[in-house]
Image (cartoon, rainbow, N blue to C red; front, side, top):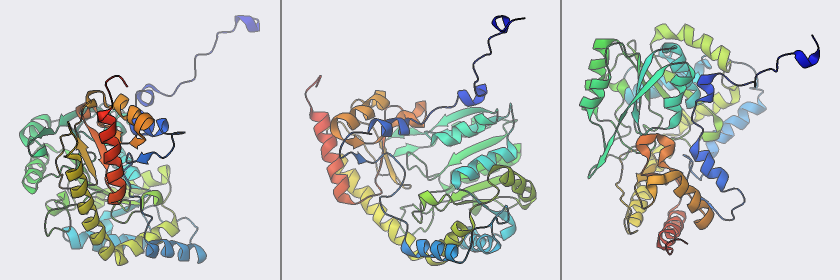
Length: 399
């Protein structure tokens, strides 16, 4: 057989489950901003402020002391102990045996799914939702069904009866994010109790993404309602959290999991095969955040609430905008003219107005018709963004 007779090799592709994953439409909009001068970016979920100095200094000191080696898969003992104290103070007695350190909150979500979900399993997720939570189970071959929040006069709300009806026997896992990205919706304690009792009866795992729990604006509350307030530490509840939001540590990639102690040996194996461990000096920075950062976090929440209220008031003066103040997170998820095709709208706003906000369709079909604006910045920047939006919407038809 000559070389001309050899079969032509097929195109080298990733497996079908990976090729079917949704690309990030937020990134797509941000990419449209490259080369556009003076864009005001409100598309990503992070503050425009740097990580506090006391956290940066702790990392620098750890580096200077040589904290550059591998650590235990589940994290260094002092950080796990500090996390156990922190969680216990907010949500009741928790031991370090129930805590694992991860390389970011999104890594924690992947690990949690890998622990309990396999090919063919049924997963339910409450949407609109940060796409990672919907797509992660699909990487593992699971089938994901969604239950949508509804939007009305009180903002975004959950029909808990609809959710319970979707959590049928044989469902393997519920993924729920509260406070929610993108809507800012917060699940009530009563709804959490109803869902927990239902999942107990049917043996359904709950993976709760609670990375925004401290960004909660109810008067007198330090944290949003958590499944950890209701569940025992050794039942089918895995709570995921992150240092990114409450201590402005998005680039540090440090998170944690609270889960049944019986999972920890297997979780350690998964960490080994994913990342081995979080960097030692970053873990030292996490200890500083937990032990020195409470005053900072409370001040941050006050600032974010003021920014939320300021932006709600400003957007309410823009013709065609329908916006409600959410109870949590750092976003407004609102409707406006043209948002029925939100990706195209947001690209146009970048090109024509220098305004960068995220399309609702990035958070699933249920998000279409809305856009997301991150308000974690100073009010002068918010005002400048609102003026650009006002001018964009007032441009002549066909311009």
